Image (cartoon, rainbow, N blue to C red; front, side):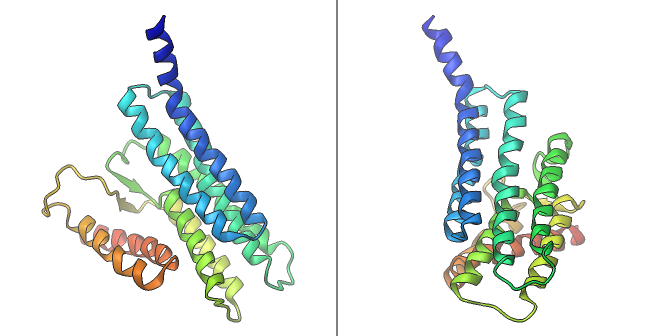
Length: 233
């Protein structure tokens, strides 16, 4: 009986962690609509931590399940799809845009994030890398970019349209057939891991020089490095 209870508890641990990811995304969305973008970004980061550990815990406990996979995708679309869309929406609402529908176009990113996650669940090519921009990376890019722009009070004529165009570009990157490397190591040696080590080492000065905006720069650098590496292989 005791073993059965332990087995039942173990079965629900990964899903509980995934639900913490989903709740973090809900809280991030609330703060995004309130215009407190740095707290929205904080809860996206917290959600990303839960997202990292739920799969790891499921593998360690040998309790992976189809329900867990579906729940993970749902949680990810809230935290890494809807929450960053809400951040962009709130930021666009601060501009005097004469076309009322424009800020709502930010939510297209949530739809493309859902499509990206659905494709990931069915795509067997993404065991050691990614095809298209991962949704957590996209969410961290937009969260850190908007927070950085607001902190530094960076604004110029046409900024809102640049943000909108950037949103559509990221939507395309989410579903694009572009291989992007994952930070997964089979061995710790330099050979075969050159791109990964170059990327990791370059992240440090970007964060030190740019602060929170450095996170957005890191994601942009990740995309550029992935595309350049793919073209040369």
